[in-house]
Image (cartoon, rainbow, N blue to C red; front, side):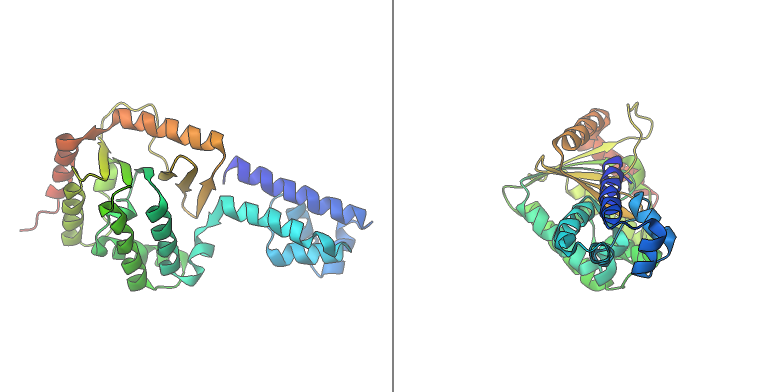
Length: 280
């Protein structure tokens, strides 16, 4: 969880505490008024728990200040913009999430991306994508609209063939070896990745094992038109649009580029990874 996100959650908690104290109630009394556990009031006020819209609405009414409901909801929406839980995003299934990416990538002119352990979604084959989305649904317990999600993910690739777009992609070599589907499908995925080298809209670099790097290959991230960073964690996406954050991630990306190889050298690494899936 990012520091900025936590600070924003604590700021919302401070505002909730202010409303409670203005109502002349201590934590125990306020919890009783709302029919909550005292611990919930404490966690919300101290930024230890993220409020829901129902929570802030009940809080405003309980404090006798119904006129601040929209203010509190705006603060909460700001939190949700920055920190997007995967389980919450996928509550309606994969299709809606993938369709959102379709729109975003169709509108973007330039995307800089890095992935350390997965082939980027925009480069995936249907079989590889099917394995990934199935794993995600199983891990998170979310709806298994796998085929709809795969079709929507494939639609994202239309941007690769349209003028006015460019994907500057860096992949750690480890991502070529992480098996997310059957061996035959992994071989096809790596063939697909190699075929993108030389495409007008794609610059593809691979950071080799053993390369000296001034960084560790942590989470993947995408920089959209130098205005938004989407960083991927185990349980959420962080959406960062502050100029300092965007500049920092671009600096990290530029450092990564210095450690990457391109063109025939990148293709050689892809072919080497594919060799392990040569079937008798």
